[in-house]
Amino acid sequence: MKVLVLNCGSSSIKYKLFDMDHKEVIAQGGIEKIGLKGSFLKLTLPDGGKKILEKDIPEHTVGVEFILNTLISPEYGAIKSLDEINAVGHRMVHGGEKFSESVLLTQEVLDAFTACNDLAPLHNPANLKGVNAISAILPDVPQIGVFDTAFHQTMPDYAYLYAVPYELYKKYGVRRYGFHGTSHRYVSKRVCEFLGVQPEGKRIITCHIGNGGSISAIKDGKCMDTSMGLTPLEGLMMGTRSGDIDAGAVTFIMEKEGLDANGVSNLLNKKSGVMGIFGESSDMRDLENAVAAGNPRAILAEKMYFYRIKKYVGAYAAALGGVDIIVFTGGVGENQCNCRSEVCEGLEFMGVKVDLEKNKVRGEEAVISTDDSKVKVVVIPTDEELMIASDTLAILNK
Image 1 (tube, rainbow, N blue to C red):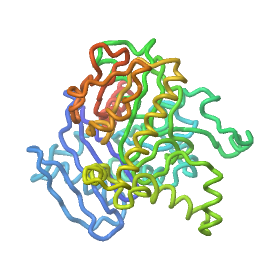
Image 2 (tube, rainbow, N blue to C red; image 1 turned 90 degrees about the vertical axis):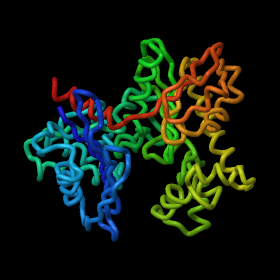
Image 3 (cartoon, rainbow, N blue to C red; image 1 turned 45 degrees about the horizontal axis):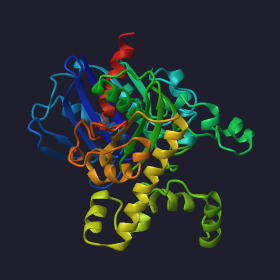
């Protein structure tokens, strides 16, 4: 059984082809700069090397076709014929309140998904382009949608509602939805397997820390709260996003800087966070190097970044009535040792003790807390694509 997983962004498509009989990736890569000059496909060769294939890719259908042709090409192919692809799983960003689990994509489902476009104007239309491209090229292959927001649909109303007039929720669906759900679901499930425990009775805080970051509070395997909101702007300080900010500060800045809604959205989404404070880059590796060189703005940005994560961990421990397991995942969470140690420092009162030697791990599954730590602190690299492929297989086998 072979499953192709597609993640279509506004100007990019990432793909992975899985052989689900062995749960292994047999081809992967991505297209960047769709609709722009210099578009290309970058694929991973069997020996781990990378190969760049340049091609003019004006829109997503051409991109998907290029990916499919590459998968069966004599030189870089992983399969002989497109008939070998049994199903396609799509990352779908915003399912609103309509989707609490992954589903087979029918016209009815796609219409309901399209109705959520307002909530994710950059992502949802791009996700749909991927679905439409597959429908055009491989009309008989079943397609499955896996929603970023679905895992968080178990949050209680008192956690997901904002304290604004209730009719705004009724009229426009203004509430907390949360994102990175596929990642939070994968790592919260995987950490229990890794530790040999059942999710029932366990209180887990999952920290997905990357260029975008979010934290979730999980009880008995279900999400009770998460830090991103109506959009992925709320919560943690991120690469270019501000995270939590006083709404009064937003209107104040708009007035002082003469910004309209688009202008202030651009400021908070693309020019804030680490980029806004450090001023040179939004990449945590660049920040780490600048901190080592003693750059005062870099030091400030890093302190703010870690402090915000710590604050959410503490808040969610309170919301869950304690915590049994803290998980770190995402590009930064998996690879940056000092992020994990700084976040956990000072949480000894909650029963959190990190073993600095064990914490030197990068990108692999490991317990990094001491043997006598009441709370297990664990690194679990996320695998959203495998989760999407597994969901796709499960729905086909229903």
